[in-house]
Length: 146
View 1 (cartoon, rainbow, N blue to C red):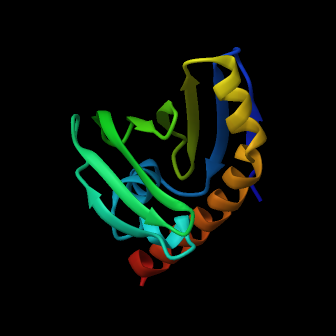
View 2: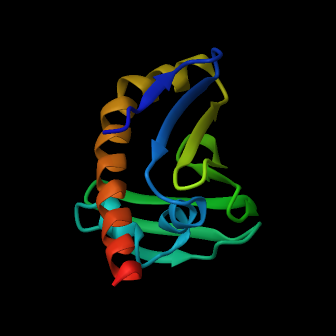
């Protein structure tokens, strides 16, 4: 099992790093394909809108309320920058051959916002969400390999 690492590189940032056992384009697709989002977001998530391009927006209805934001940069399969709740989220997908290293950096306006999000359960949420992503990637690999 791959380890999820959560750090605070500055007073305004949270960084989450994780290696997935799948090629980079597969991992990127899990983050950008509206048909796959509900599988790993869980809890009855419904993708109401998802326009994956710079300036495009997204809106998910979840058991915990609505999550919405705007894509600022879309550079498949390397980089995705989007607004997310109270922060700017940058996702970098590093090609490691049959594996992909994901670096997720959350940038907040204030240290208090960062700490509130950290205390809200970022680490547990990332670990459980990434475990569900592993399941989606394994299923997709089975389908591709027949």
